[in-house]
Image 1 (tube, one colour):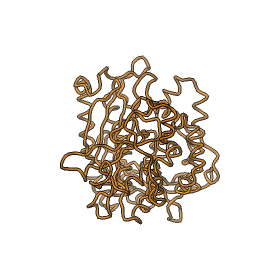
Image 2 (cartoon, rainbow, N blue to C red):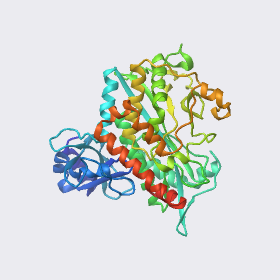
Image 3 (tube, rainbow, N blue to C red):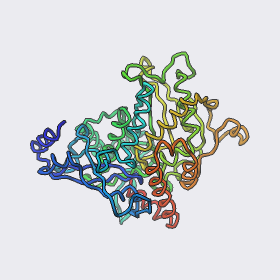
Image 4 (cartoon, rainbow, N blue to C red):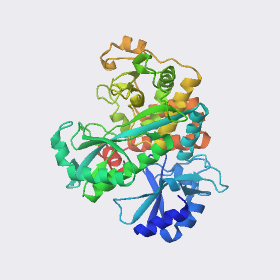
Length: 449
């Protein structure tokens, strides 16, 4: 769409404000809004943003990052193809933006720019990285200033379907109105816990969709007087909320699933195994990007079905990478891999991009994955588990950050400015939350994600 076409739709539909949305290094969705009378100009010139915002953590504490101080500005330039009308916000539209320097070049610390660069790496190999997120969230009521689950339903129970039927119908309708294809929904294990998955798309589009899905989940809930939290661990005694990434690799024409080989182990190609090997090789550092909050590591525990050891296996829900069984008659189309240690506190542009960087390193070095594990790795004797390469994850955000600081492949992929600002933001969050009591730690994440 051209800027004039977007404006015409806005005037026809009575849209007054259009949000220019982005996700920052703290995984927080932020933005500014342009009035329809200025929309065409702002779509061409962008909206000004201080360079300091990529050094702002999720507690709105500005971090000292060289090049991200009070002097300097970039532009939030919207992608017209992402324009959508927000069903949960009266007379409001939205677009996802790129961070652009004043000279018109992509900003080095722009998350969407990073994912586009990593997608180009896949294109150089004649492949497209396609993915989608399975979002889990906790639907809550506010009682006496406390957030309590909206129901006490059991996993997949029809009681859970009934308890949230109205809100769920509103959510699915709102996603459909934005052109987002819903694949599955069901009440999950935790009280008030929901899960919804959408159709896979090429990486940049998939990250854009993930931002809109997160916004829609929370916006629809608010419209019904509820609070939806995608925090990795909403309450101490509740099931954790994951954001598992399902992904596949396709040829440049989108006709052949490069992961699929009916003669290979578990129906996987050599390319698939090398990509898996790259991810596993970089996983301790990758966690700082895919599970990047203080709260994330309260979810990533052994025997919690969230994964806690570096390993892979067929339909193993305790493995870092699960190889899902394919569907009858759709073997090639349904071949995909699931990355388990991810959640919605991550920036999807960074998470998808880092996942690509790790996998491409596996392709470039022709790495071989360790032997797959077909049992719960926590049940193996320590010596046997270590011999199989199933090492325990970093157990805190601090440990994951340290691993990322030592991973030249991921740091080089991110680039100097993005890497420095990301590490500064996430390290500051570790320090800030470590100084809080447990109630404030949980509440802080519950409200932000």
